[in-house]
Structure formats: structure tokens, C-alpha cells
Length: 285
Image 1 (spheres, rainbow, N blue to C red):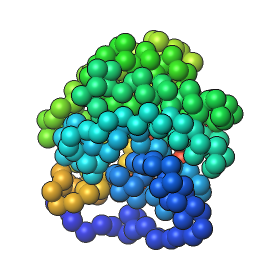
Image 2 (cartoon, rainbow, N blue to C red):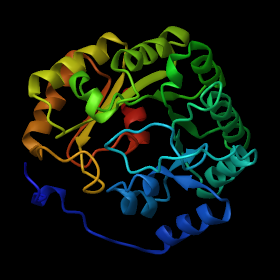
Image 3 (cartoon, rainbow, N blue to C red):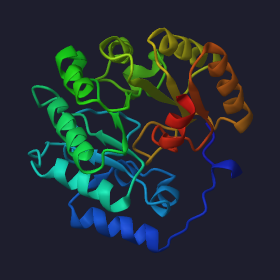
Image 4 (cartoon, helix red, strand yellow):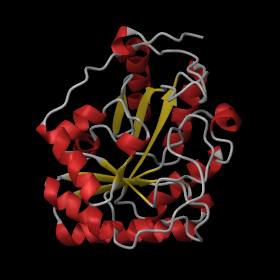
């Protein structure tokens, strides 16, 4: 196991007025971002560009994924003002593209799908020119829950498979690989005009042929956009990094995925599912 980060994963720490502006606005509106909660390596860059991925439905997740830094515990009550606050943030930042994600809320009858729809509608009301991407949990496989999100009309629906099927018991013990693939497939079946997106990490112990199999499964599930990035363990208590994948190997995965027919592929060590999401949408059209 390799513990020392290679040079290509070293990130320049930077601040600035834009970073402080975004942070202050998030506090004022009582909003959370996955950028902060998941300790994203691109936080400084994205905040510096006045962009963020908003995390709704509280800060406590009901799942126990071993790769994720987001808090696990007893979920809080849903903030009825959250759709309005997200919409106000989008307006204040003049975002052209916004990404909205959430913790997993298995405690809710619809997994929070109705709240996702309310946020989408609120953003559309105050900023109709903004394209909307949602990064959703699996809603425990509920087609009716997914339909609520689809009906609200986001431009992109993303659901991350996160890793290869073999590693699910160790990495995503409460999730199901085939359930996630089925959700992705249902997106296009419900509305062919919505872009279906997914992403996963490498460096968790997968083999190249298993990555190829995962990419093939995503294409067979009508996935349009895929993101591939290096797994970075948030702490010693999380799943360890088994391998640091080289930039050359990421480039090879990108060529492989493009050859399968994905509309857009982002594959490099620091790629995360929401990184440059607006550019991915533009290039997918």
C-alpha cells in the first residue's frame, strides 16, 4: 500500500475575496456544501470561481460508506426554507450552472426526492437561465421517488456508482451496485431529454479490467457522462488508499470510455463528480 501522495496530487492552497464571499453567503443562508463536508480537494478553486455544490437535506447521512467524510448519525428535520435559500444563493452568485446534492435520507418515505424537486423549482423561479444538475442518492430503488425529481426537470441527473461491484461490501455496504445501475437507466426511460451522469473512484483496490466492466455497465444503462477520479482517504478510519493511479492510466481510462460512446468523460486524479460540471454539460450537447 502506498501512503505518500505523489506530486500530481499536490494542491496549491489559495484564498481570496471570492472564497470569503462564498463562505460568508453560505453561513448567512444556513447552507451546506459537499465541497466542505466531503473535504473536496478542489474546494479552493471552485469557491474562487464563485461556484459550489449545494448539499441539501441536512448534514447527517443514514448510510455507512467507508470512503466518505460526510457525517453519519441521526438525521435532522428538513429545513422548509432550504429551497428558497439555495435559490437565493444561485441568484447572488449569478451561477450559469448549479449542482445540488444531498446526504442519503433512508429515514424519509421518498428519500428526500420531493425536497429535491422543491429546490429545483425554486431555482428555476428565480434564475430560469441557470442549468440545474442534481446528484442524487439511490432512493432505495424507488421509481416513484425518482419520478418526482425527473418531473421537476433538471438538465442533468447524476447518481454515482462510486466503485466496482466487487468492492461494494467493503466500500458501500448499504448500497447495491445493480440498484444504482437500474436508477441510472430509469432516468433516460422517464425523460430522454435529461442527461444521465455517474462517477466513480479508482485506487480502492480495483483491477483495470474491472474498471472496463464498470464502464461497460454504465453505457448499457444509458449513462451519458462519466467522471473518474482518485480516491483520497479522509482519515485513517476510512477505507485506505490501495494505490495512487497515474495520470497516464487515467488518460487510458478516458480513451477507453470515449470509445464506448459516452458523450463526455472526465478522467484525472483530482476529478470529482461535480468538478467543471457546467463545462461537461456544454460539451455533451
